[in-house]
Image (cartoon, rainbow, N blue to C red; front, side, top):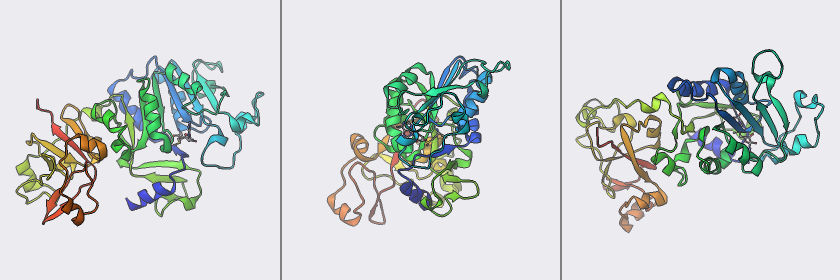
Length: 376
Ligand SMILES: C[S@@+](CC[C@H](N)C(=O)[O-])C[C@H]1O[C@@H](n2cnc3c(N)ncnc32)[C@H](O)[C@@H]1O
């Protein structure tokens, strides 16, 4: 985990991470399994992409007919506007076009559109993509790309990590369907958490074994040991996930859980097994549940869970009460802790949960407060 965090910090300014084809395929298949017509007759926009390289463009153009798409639009961001400067070389594909423009190639974004069979081979696929330079640099916040957003039904991309909040707000302005990649830590942001709580956004199906590998162009020394694989040019993030507002099957699979008594007897976690009770927070009426599989099935009250719970969250089984973090925590009515406890544990912050262990105040990391659906 330390490696991952270090890598995140070191590469914070680098937004150039390219998504792999099998990851896109696995994720999109989950929505199709749930509703085979989810993309039928729809216009899909892939912003913040590099259509000449992108696996998003390759996947959606390649499956245009199978998905029943009406229109595919993919846009790129101008090389000179990118924060992370890399030597730029236009592709042969671009330079061979009669309208190739050496200056625009650096300063303008590009738009690729697919609607019909242009090549005349009787199929609509990647060969039929038509492209041109955008008027601007392809910034998703520009008027030009907003217009494309408004035209689209579904927006799919891996947006720049550094502008994730802004990107989600940009999506929410118009209430479109979306499938995007982001950092799991984003769930604690004050702009993002309310969307999760109100079931306006949830976690997607997910990466293979929770590990996301992205192709990078950045120099090797930007990464901590074990994060970057030189032989594949892939960088590994353990805390990346898909966010969406489109339904998939995993979201509706309730967790199979043990009762509280069964947990005390059989839990695989030494923190739970052999106990007589779950730890109760001092400043909020809820129990501390440090592992999702240790949720007691027969407990009706509030429970504090790590944010990884969201990957298993089934809205028919649980409701989300809030997050014990910052202002959101204060709004939950967490009781202030006595000042003398701060002397014992300086990391205590108002708006966060704490419990006492052997006379010492302990603060668990950003807990999400949940409770079983009262109807169950
Ligand atoms: C994480 S990468 C993902 C690229 C591609 N979508 C993929 O997954 O393979 C995000 C891309 O967004 C671009 N980008 C950064 N800021 C942007 C902005 N304001 N508007 C549009 N694109 C931006 C970056 O240059 C980068 O290429």
